[in-house]
Length: 249
Length: 76
Image (cartoon, rainbow over all chains, first blue to last red):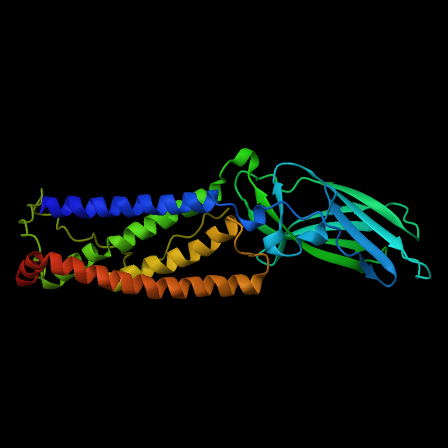
């Protein structure tokens, strides 16, 4: 019996080790998202004769339009973005007053950064924007979608572009959330392996006789036979006696 | 609780956790709500089915290896 128990214990331990090894492999394998973005000149984005470009540390964000080509960034390092717009010949003049950057997770903008021009003028221009991604860089890492937008003074979005970044924790530190998730995975796999044992326990419980109540101990004699153990009777006011009135003055 | 239901419970949690873990490692994009819900549901369903099958198989193998214990337990 002890041999079987140690054997199942050994199997559980080996499964847990295998899961850790697979997870470590996943972390160490170079993900396509980690590849440095291609520096090839992306086609300029033109809308209404105006060319819009956004660069992230001098890399055009249009080169990171898919998850597999996401920009690999350090979540604790600040990024320097540059919003440029150039009017073509014969294009209607545009006025940009706000450069906005938003980071999305589960459909919600978890971070928004605006750089607003106080005196916007019509014509070509550029807006620099410095942004430190998240302050909880040691907690979360992963792939996120960002949106860079050019906003007109009346609030209209003149142009926007989605791109992807893969944020890593500083100094290659494995962030807290993946560690917690890995522990959960190991625990659940261990629970799955132990499910056979649960089946045996459940079957034993089904076959076990109903539990008998423990033998009753004789009730101890009350200290005084005159005072019954029942609840004391509520104090009754004798009939005909008027209730006490409040003190009159 | 039977082995299959225990395995299904573990598998559902495992399927959901793996989807979030893949996002953390940069394999899955969870920026939009609707595909995220789909991924999580698919992970939970597939994990639950696989977990139930694995739990059922493990339960059978355990009982076959411990037939004497199970018989003693049921005759008690």
